[in-house]
Length: 286
Image 1: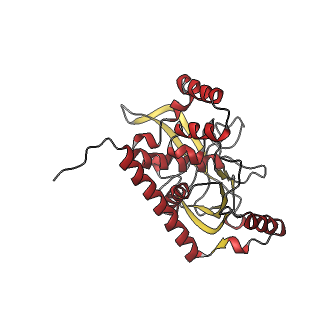
Image 2: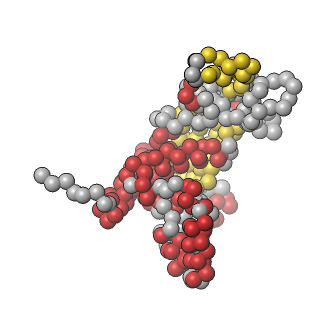
Image 3: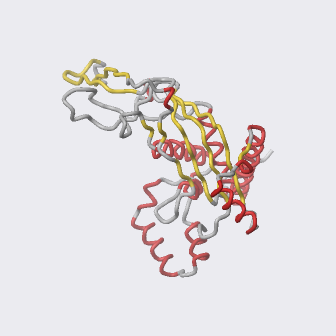
């Protein structure tokens, strides 16, 4: 499935904190400073790990797909079960032809994992660690106090006072996403997930129940290329990459909206076909 290059989508933008953000680096062992510092880069600047963004995105999409049909996004624990591992091992032993083996493995793969990956199938989705936008970061963190509460008495637990760092609101981070060899419906799935970030519906980090972690995504640019089976188009694309002449593959705002709509419609059609072919819910009668 990944032996032949078919298409590439690159999305760049900014992820901005609407409220303070806390992605913890774990408990500090330093004698001074916050008990729970945030993750930082080598320059002590705030950082959002790409895995945090990807995990939050995947989790939200899984909840949507399970609302349609539980089989579309299985429990991740099932993918590492001894039974599933034995099935995958046997498939690899029985089918030496790569194309046939790929089809067999896809039959063992739920919808969400075809985009985000599993131990036996590579992810099509890549996201870099999100680094801070320089002119939105003023070199300071906020420190806040916390205390453990006894739920039964609703009183503070003795000796359980701690403090934690947060990244201030209105701090922006650079976002870069790359997706390769995706099906049209998979791109639609990605668009729905990114819209959740655009509309501030997916919080990040810890302290979300107390209002931390609300973020807002702004997509600045979409770069899209599809070979359409034309080797000459691919050669031109490779040449333009080397020459850094990628303007022909960049989409303006109106064009971006058309792409998003086309991909989203492809996803909806794919899911409706799945429901028609696999649903066990009896049809309603008048």
